[in-house]
Amino acid sequence: MPKSKEPRFEENLRRLEQIVDQLENKEAPLDQSLALFEEGVHLARACQKTLEQAKKKVEILVKETGELKPFEESTN
Image 1 (tube, rainbow, N blue to C red):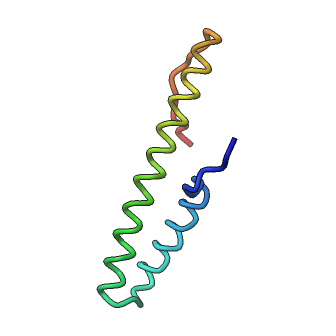
Image 2 (image 1 turned 180 degrees about the vertical axis):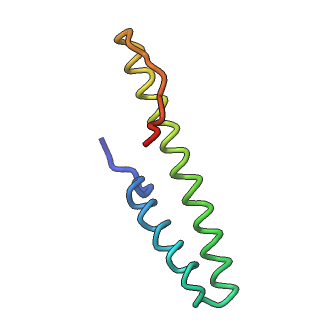
């Protein structure tokens, strides 16, 4: 199977974290900050899409075994 040229989820998340750090430092000029923000929005959407696809795959796999259980958030 050929590798996709799309960055992996982990790479997108790592880059998104770098962008957040840069924006929180407030050292970049406005135009650079806007470009970083735009890139961050794109990466956040890509990560969300990947997570949604993974969730659907897990639901399908679990459903095939007849043991589909809804996700419960922990309340720690």
